[in-house]
Image (cartoon, rainbow, N blue to C red; front, side):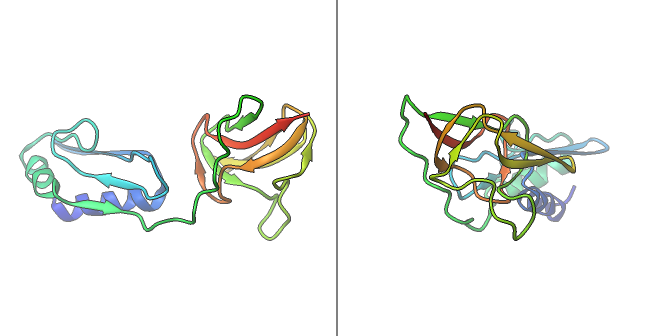
Length: 168
């Protein structure tokens, strides 16, 4: 694999939002993983590192070595909603699947819920799109929405907190 091909793969990872990509061509193998700790997402390519790139074969090792100093960054996204201070009395609605978070049933429609809205068990809070399927996420508890923790259209991971609810 050439250095240019590896750079293109890094760009694909950044643009698509996938967490990990592994490509094998003959003896060459490249694995790229993203680690997200802040709204600015980074991928750092390092040779022979299980965290960023694993490679075999002389061409891949040379390309990975040349790329070791290269750091690819996504442009800063919209500011992430502030998470309320951890409070024992809040219930967090978490994503049951990996997908894309949508706060409304269709583009331009009003959100299912807003901060300050009272919700009841079974009320739809959002949609998570996964593999072209729209999955409605419902509230398990009655209470007031204290915070919306994810931006509309953002990718979400399994178990990621979506909403904070203060139960009644």
